[in-house]
Each structure stands twice: as C-alpha cells, then as structure tokens.
Image (cartoon, rainbow, N blue to C red; front, side):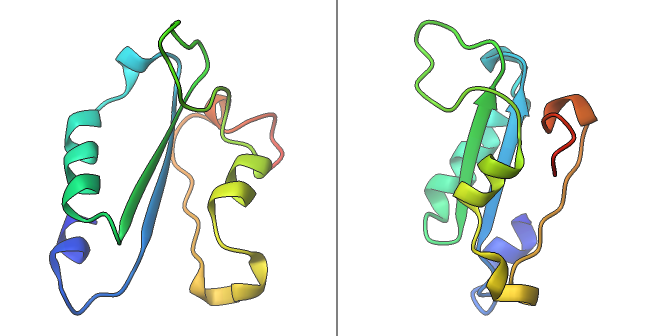
Length: 97
C-alpha cells in the first residue's frame, strides 16, 4: 500500500477498516494516521473497537456487512472495488460477510 500511495501515477483509493478490542490494541495506528495525513485523497482509515473507552468517538463493534457497505463503494462498480479481509473471524462480525 505504501508503494502504491507514493506512486503519483497510481489512482487507486484505499480504505482500511480496522477492528480491535480496545484503542490500545490498534497496531501501527501512528503509521496509518501519518499515511492518511500524507495522502488524504487516496487513503482513509476507519478504526472500530469492541470495548471503547469513555473518550472514543469512532465506530464501535465488529466489521460487518453493514460497516463495509457504509464505507465502500456500491457493488455495481463491479471490478473497480476490491475487498480484502484479514484477521480473526471474531473481528468481522457474526459471519455475515
């Protein structure tokens, strides 16, 4: 992703939907936030946590089909949208993907 973001000829837009138990569990958050700031037109990051702190302002829960639908382009874009899921099944909902 970092290679593609740095390539001025690459027009790919990335959206990372990243689910964790708590905010403290978000690995590489500083790096992802720095990339998002550096490439605001081509990278967006959505963090979800299952157990939010009192100060958490982002989405809560697991990566579900509803979360994906609300953050990713519509299915009628066909091959222009690619979705890759990685991680424990626990973090991407009640098996509804």
